[in-house]
Image (cartoon, rainbow, N blue to C red; front, side, top):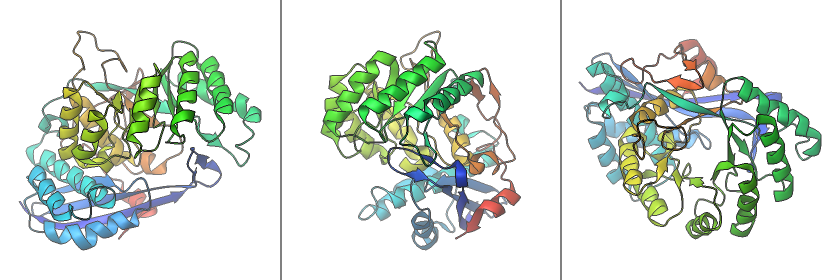
Amino acid sequence: MKITNITAYILRTPLGKERFYSSQCAFPERNSLLVKIETDEGITGWGEGGQYGPPEPVAAAIKHVLRPKLIGENPMQPVRIWEELYAFTRDFGQKGTYIEAMSAIDIALWDICGQYLKQPVHALLGGAFRQSVPTYATGCYYRGEDYLDYKGSLAALEEEARSYVDAGFSMLKIKVGLLSVEADLERVAAIRQAIGPDSALLVDANHAYNVHTAIRMAKGLEAFDVRFFEEPVTPEDRSGYREVRNATTVPIAGGECEFTRYGFRDLILQGCVDIAQPDLCVTGGFSEWMKIQALANSFGVTVIPHVWGSGVALFSALHVLACIPPTPHTANPVALQNEPVIEYDRNPNPLRDELLFTKLEFEGGRIAIPQKPGLGIEINPSALSQYGQPF
C-alpha cells in the first residue's frame, strides 16, 4: 500500500455572541486543521493538528514541505515515518508548527493502519485497560462584554457550574487568571458552593501568573479542595513551575504547550509537574504519545491529556486514554487518583459536534472507547464543506 495524496483542510467558524475568554484572549471563533491521507487501496485516514493558533502555517508546512516527502510511502509504518520527518525538520522545527503538522499526519497514518488491519487504534497501541473513560467538563470561562464585572456575573457562574453537575459530570475544570487573585478566588468559592463538596474541582490559569502570584493563588485554592492547578506559570519557566509545585499541596499540571518526548523529558526531570498534559494533536501524534506516556510512567507522573479542537481530536484522545494503565495499579481504579480522565470542553463547538457522523456515547459520566477500526470515525462531508476549505 502507498500514499497517493495528502490534503490539509483549514477549519474555521465564528462564535459571534457565544465567544468566551481565558486569561490570555477572547475566543471569537473555533479553528483547527484536518489532514486527509489517501492510499492506492482506497483507505483514507484523518488526523488533526494546528489547534492553538492560525492553522494556515501548519497547512503550509504539510502542503509545501512534508507532503512531497510522503507521497509513495508505505502508510503502515507510522513510527519510521515520524522519526524520518523529525530528523528532516530538526534544524528548524523542534517545536510548534512542524510538530503540529506531524501530529496530524501521524494520527491519520494510524487511522489507516487500523482500518487496514480491521482493528481500533487502541488495539494497535497495545490494548485497552477500560471500555469507557471518566469525563470532566471544562467550563466557567469569562463571558460577555462586561466580563470584568465579576460580582455581577456570580449568579450566572453558579448556575453554569450547577448545570454541569446536573448533566452528569462529577468533575469540573474552571478558568482563572484574567482577574485579580482575590476576585478569582471569589469566583472559585462561588463555584465550589454551587457544585457541592462531592464534585472534583480543577483550575486552569493558562499561564497567567508570575511565580509569586501563582503561589498566592495556589495557597488560596487549597481551601477549596482543588484536585489540580493547571499551567500556573508560562511554559518556558521550568524553575517557576518547580517553585510553585514545592509551595503548595495542590497538584500542579502542565504540558499542553510542550512538544515531543524531549520537551516532556525536561518538564518531568526538572520536577515541574505532578500531572503531564500532552495534547495528542500538538505534541507529535500517537507515535510520540507512546514515548511520552512511557517516560511519565517511569517517573511516577500522572498523564491526563489536554483535548481541544474538533471531533477528530476527541476521538483520537479516547484511544490513548484506553491504553493508559492504572498508575499505580489497584483492583478498583478511581478517577483522578489512578484512573485517567478525558477533558470535554462545554463551550460551543460546531467542529466537534457537527463534523462527524459518529457520535460519542455518554453514560454515567463516562464516554465509551471507540471500537470500530482505525479512529472509528466517519466525516460528515457537508459539515466539512461548511466549516473547512482545502489548503
